[in-house]
Length: 82
View 1 (tube, rainbow, N blue to C red):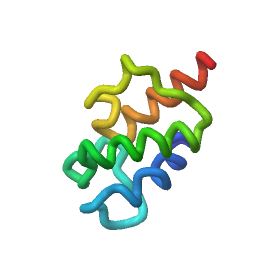
View 2: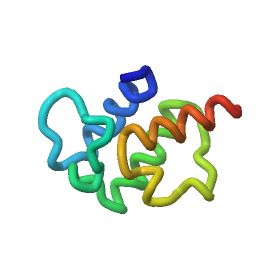
View 3: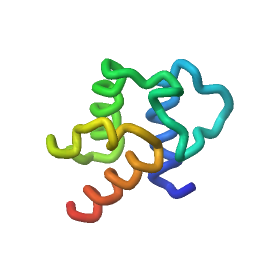
View 4: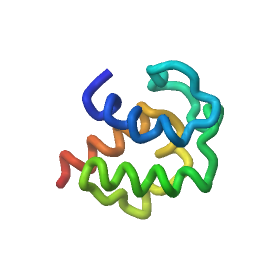
């Protein structure tokens, strides 16, 4: 796991109702782990704060928040452009 994924685990953990253990599988479906539409909004704000980024509106879709790996890719892409 890369640094972004490790940091995202810390952001995501409090929002996942069905996650057990210390490590979140980067390819696990976050919806299956308990991330719902309401908690996704809070995760978005937490991610933006943690990484000092703004996720553009066009990336605010279900795919972006589908897995830890996908979210990390989006964050890394925004940081690289920034």
